Amino acid sequence: MTQFLSKKNRKTPRQPERIVQFGGGNFLRGFVDWLVETLNDEADFGAGIALVKATPGRYEALDAQDGLFTTWLHGLRAGEFHEQTRLITCVNRVVYPYDDFASYLALARQAGIRFIVSNTTESGIAHSPDDQLDDAPPATFPAKLTRFLYERWRHFGGASEVGCIIIPTELITDNATRLREIILQYAAQWALPQDFRAWLANCNLFCNTLVDRIIPGYPAADAERLFAQLGYRDRLLVAGEIYHSFIIEAPQSLLDELPLGRAATPLNVKVVADATPYRTIKVRLLNGAHTAMVPLGLLLGIESVREAIEHPALGPFLQELIFQEVIPSVSELPRQELDAFARHVFDRFRNPRIHHRLRTISLNSASKVKERIVPSLLGYQTHEGELPERLVLALAGFLRLYRGDTCPLNDAPPLLDWFARQWSAAATHKGLARAALRNEALWDVDLSALPGLVEAVAAALDAIEAGRLEELLTRADG
Image (cartoon, rainbow, N blue to C red; front, side, top):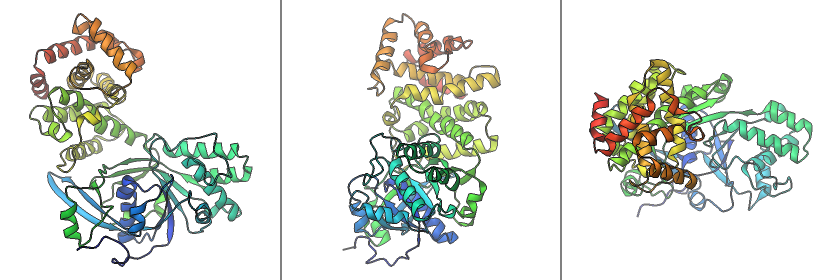
């Protein structure tokens, strides 16, 4: 029988610990740890990871495998399916603050530590007034990190050279800025020395990030095939798409320590002065395409993203929506870069190994339409002087979906009740469109004031109700 993966049966090098990683979930293992392993293999990065369990409990499978695991990446490139596996050896050990707080503090006293990375979920970067300096450990991730940095500052006498480069990957805007603010808040709350607060601000680099790679996790359907190819079994085999994007907001001097340009594997990692334009294109193109396809796809009875892209009417419609309406509404980056990003988006949507359900993406669709569709609609109208008919149809599809009789909706109950009342009270689709579009609390703007929008949305609703949605999609595509 093929053995499970462990350092007993796999001889692997041990790199000096230079990275502290808070969290050991699928995303960090399939993205950050894969990146570190790639740089170790191809760019002489020479970085080992001490992984910190930021919540109670243990990573039993990771301990059993001595920190080893395998990534299986897959996806389409120029229409062809590719896959690759990589053994990840850079995780040296797991530190458990809830079981052995002394070892956690000892980690802070290691001179070679330079990088701190994290993914503690969107709710992980939060402050709690209940956290105390003498807690072993404090409850929140920022409090744990404050205690770690304070121990480091105290042990090394405030030396500037032992400051850290802190790279959170939590999916919130300006994640490092927010983390830094909370750490300084704890420093004040705990009455820590002013010299420590100055060291925090001046000797540590907090880098906002924007990360993008779908990591579904353990690939149960393909595991046995992969184990046969690998020659070992892996409890922590993690699947992800080949595509990745990592935008790090930092000085270019970061590249002196993070050798991204020396790797043979193409790495879509950019160090930029301002991540805002990249956040805009992700929200407007990738997320916007998802948000546009959800109501139209669900109204057509389509289940997944891939089915939507392969649909003979909806698929071409979505491509034209992105290339002809969304991209012209975005001015933050050159057209060539936007086109390339959009092509990657549609390759990702066609990945046969990822089944992304539209019902899952439909969660809280109202706020997503406000953030992802409305800015493109307004931007197009400003730049082109006319309404974007495909984005208008996507907006109408959302309003029709929120009548609530196509499928169960997952949004704030008061909002769903409001839409139910509008649909019940409206005598015509024009009346419904006017009531919905003028709700500034919903859109942050009175959309009904946009010339022709009420009438265009009403006409689209009339056609959808008459069973002519596919005809509309095809007509818009033409």
